[in-house]
Length: 240
Ligand SMILES: O=c1ccn([C@@H]2O[C@H](COP(=O)(O)O)[C@@H](O)[C@H]2O)c(=O)[nH]1
Image (cartoon, rainbow, N blue to C red; front, side):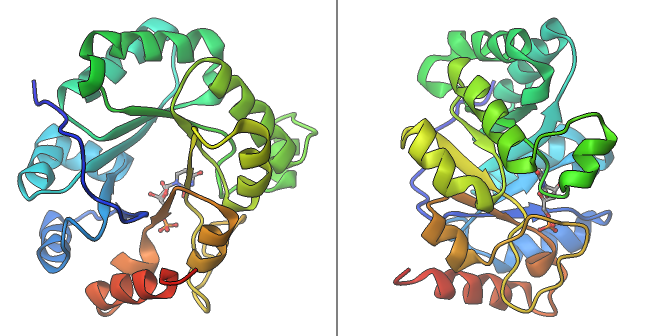
């Protein structure tokens, strides 16, 4: 078991490493300083390269957010979250729509780890979704209203925070307080294409809205100079 050491990283940026080529991903990590960002490992790289990939990034000094968005019966999710904790990841997540019993089981699975447990957060409404996507799956609320409902449930279950859109951050802060992490993908620097994202904000807007962490993938990983793209984003946050 790898113990999670308290992280000294103060950067709000989580770089989403979504690559099918491990060498390209490694080349990117060679260019960036683990004190300037954390890394997010999601379904693509974890499925291709497995837990060893997480360990490789940790051995290079990076905190890892394992973004596998577990969504299954409570027993399965509890064991999956415990496995993530054994990997020593800094943060792990589940889908809030798995419900309160599932989220409670996930939280309880981490109790034996005490202070070494990773942060446990829950996805509310994916940032790629808009009202019409929710209607398609039988939900008539707006994304903001549905996300607030799921975030409230997440807080009641005692998790550490949620994945949401930066558009929801101001209202979540008011209604859910400050001791609850807001982790926001769908971040696009000014002039970047939205691609498949729908509820987007620029990094300075997201910081202004009060998010704790911003997940940024393609605007950095697909840039001609990823290190410069990251530096420019961090620069844009200075003084906000
Ligand atoms: O609601 C969500 C939850 C997770 N993600 C993940 O974040 C990154 C975003 O990458 P970009 O290239 O910046 O769009 C990606 O890994 C998603 O799986 C999300 O986008 N929205």
